Image (cartoon, rainbow, N blue to C red; front, side, top):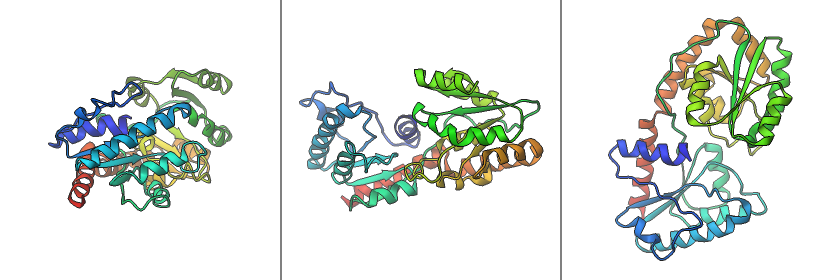
Length: 313
């Protein structure tokens, strides 16, 4: 919601685009709904956050709205950052939405490739922006290394790919898990003897400032992971910390600004043995992030895509 909707809208507003965010929840009044879109040129729909049992209800509302907007010559774009096209329940809705709009936007080239298999609607790639100020690049000055993992609880299962590698590296470390306060998350932290902290945006920036490095484990052979966006990697580097990540395509595109490889333990050993090289890599990575993922850059990409869609309608 932050990366693809609220922060993007704020960046577009700073770029001179009159932009507003509106929520279409289950209590939306169909009769007055269109009043929210009076005098707009384009509407960008973020992803549907409804739980599976409510997904079809919210999808029907979205499709109804799309038809009404397009009938009034308002262009509609649908934004995708997750691949659920093969999901038994969500897949048909994802395809219906992608075929009902004027253009689809995707967070990564891999996501765009998946979408193009399901729609003939034009697909454009707009990556995620970074939030906050550029942090001071810093490497570890003490042992144990303070490692951070942050993300949605559904991604906790990726720790099984990275933690054994970290443990085999023989580098002393202390791990913090920053995620939503679900029971499973707190249990996972206890099981691996990690410190748990409930996620919030302020907590994220505090933990990024306090840690020595961030681990971003994943399964690089899972096609659903291959479409993931680079936001965690980019935010880590932008904060001035080293990111240690498995080789997903989005991370490989930023590899010169962190460490990307099959064995996170090898990355941890390199970091511990080569702090000066790691520091330079972080600084180079921050320059890369500034060019590719700054709010100004991403706002410009969104603006161009929206203008192209309006011109083609």
